Image 1 (tube, rainbow, N blue to C red):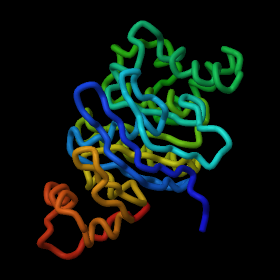
Image 2 (cartoon, rainbow, N blue to C red):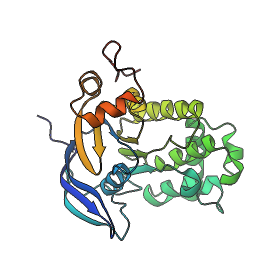
Image 3 (tube, rainbow, N blue to C red):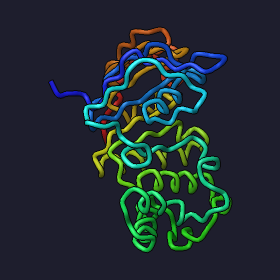
Length: 259
């Protein structure tokens, strides 16, 4: 059996007034697409931040996150992170070009000239219209969908092997949400990245992921291949999530088919 990229054992995270995760254990397989699904407050974002090494200072972590490599992947270099709110993750006083180029300059050792050329190429790659003009723009001058594309470009600027998208589509309308999901699908396939896709939308997860892990109140209640989760959910919590997006009285769901 192939050694997992990461083995998570009894991961618990607590803050001063609440516990966000309780004894979560799972293996992350290199090159897979794992969706972390659950309602608001289920611990999804805390799990993503713990995996990326981005927990806030007031968080207390117990348990073990054991990577197969000699050192843990570095956030910003080996792990790209796309946050839910691009307005908050992008600096409002810096031009887009500088924000996308920064990762390549810092982590790939590029000169600013090379990093800016790399950034413009990335903006084109994420299908931002007129990328040379957008390089000079500020975040407030872009639409929500464009800002999220910029955030994705910045997250992959250092050519990470792992991409974590934390509710990266939830603040967008349905059409733009579909466009961003298709973009993530393409980028992950092209670069053979491992994807952690955090969402409350199990239907969206089923179209993008290989496996789904369901969290409820900070606990892992079910994990398995998409086809198994959709066709034969073992947990009532999973069934409740499915009922919000699918007609469970119809023919068995297939799902999880890569386009």
